[in-house]
Image (cartoon, rainbow, N blue to C red; front, side, top):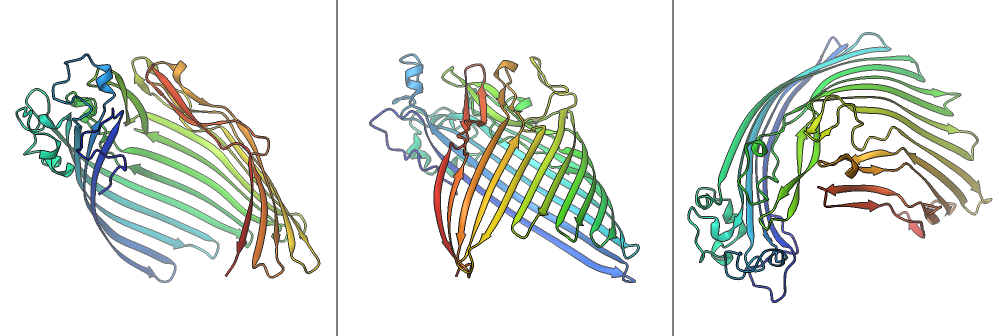
Length: 453
């Protein structure tokens, strides 16, 4: 059971409570997997198995929103004490089970060539039940003004949907279920050209499970059919071509990978505007499906030992990730637009220089630069002018570390965000009402002392 520390205890507050809540969560899972592994003639190895999962998750939240007493006309709150003394309750439950069978085979064709492939079939069934948010007095089939929070007992009792179906015309229990069947498969070819040169090609068809949004019904109105419906499984066909190498007597390690992925029913979060019981505008963060998306890119990493004292690490990446056809709502068409949180370019450079101190330990000097291209953090549901855009940024960090000769103790002086770059990390827009953002850490420095035992 999980509880919010700012929970409503059932005791009427003396002051106005702007917003407090108590949450109950109960999650039970059972999983079992059986595997049989072996080899044939030494060149072919295999794994055959099955997997079973069963789960039951239950969640309830009681919210005390005294602020609504200031936003609603006097006399319109139906129960004595108003919002400040009467919590509203929202509950849901999801149950499901899954069954899968799989086989994976690897063939060592030669001392340098390896071919592998696998197949898995997954069957899943999920059932979701929810009751829209109501006052405690409205949990029964008929409104009972005397059935207050203390009469309910513990919050978990509100999960009895038979006993508490919701008052006619105010509360309602809704259910939905769905079954998914998904085959997944993969193939991989790897070739060890030399002891220091390795190449591979991989293909995979995979999926991410569909499911239900637990945030439905929070507005107090009945749950609409479209809200109750599940988001579907996400499917992807991915291709990857890579090369790994150790060059110049292993003083340079260079790896490069190119990749391409095609998604169907891509799962994306969207912030939906809802009308609260007070008449104010609120939001609900839900998972939904875009019709398709394509990503392609290249990743590179190089580690070089330039001298016995100087080492350099370089990492870089290019990503082109765009929606296919995706009409978020009649006002927002994201077809062909970049995916959220997918910067086109990223890179870093890290330089380390070690200076021995003639038997008195050593100094290690480190400088690091990171770059991230600008990107869209989230798209608005109302107007593109409310999109949250993350500007590009370059950050510089550094440190000097003294380590004793036996490497048991060290002292490090460090600085982060050396040039005090002010940069936005995340954010969200709430309808057309307001927006907020979170900024990265400013410039700071410190001293670290450590010991090994």
